[in-house]
Image (tube, rainbow, N blue to C red; front, side, top):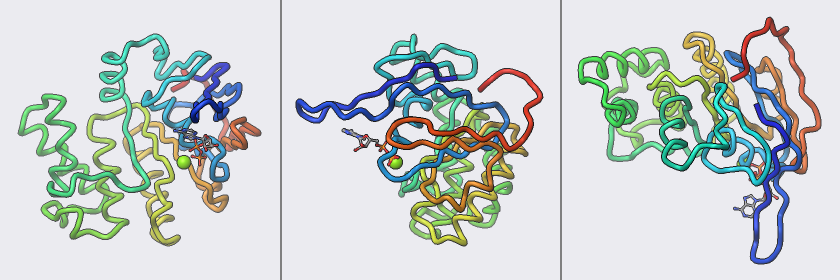
Length: 232
Ligand SMILES: Nc1ncnc2c1ncn2[C@@H]1O[C@H](COP(=O)(O)OP(=O)(O)O)[C@@H](O)[C@H]1O
Ligand SMILES: [Mg+2]
């Protein structure tokens, strides 16, 4: 939940307002799209919700936790435990296989090897890559790389996965397949997903659509009725 969020970048002496008075509730267990043209503030907003960056003003609750009050160490622990990330450029480690890329956050989290292996196997199966577990990113197509990244984002069973323009480097057919996979994973794993896109064609895929323009939210469409419960 974001209340009265503002964010300004400093370019030399010039202040660039990136977000102005953002008030927003991202609902749990839903598929949300953040839609707006290039430069509208999508990445800035996702970086704030993802606890990668901090707002200048306002309150930010993620999973019921007031993350704007956390120091850097606690913020980074919170991020690892509760959030997953998918990027436009996939951001896989090129020297690791698909399976090792998914396993990596589980090693950092200290999960036992046998548990890790079965989690990785289940996730690669879920994203349709069971037969590609031992390939490196360089041996995979863009769509397959993004599937690995989605499996990795889900590895630690986050509450919320943030995907910044996850289809921008993919052709439209592959992009649609990736959005459909994220939707499947969102439902199967019982997690909230928020993805950003400048492509209005992807709006229909989501339960909720948040429209942003020039750093301000210009509309929030809830397509599915909400039955109550806490915000993510
Ligand atoms: N690191 C930065 N320094 C200065 N200005 C920035 C920085 N990052 C983004 N901006 C500016 O903030 C605004 C929002 O950018 P961004 O969040 O990247 O939008 P989007 O992801 O929708 O393209 C733009 O005007 C952009 O130029
Ligand atoms: Mg962006």
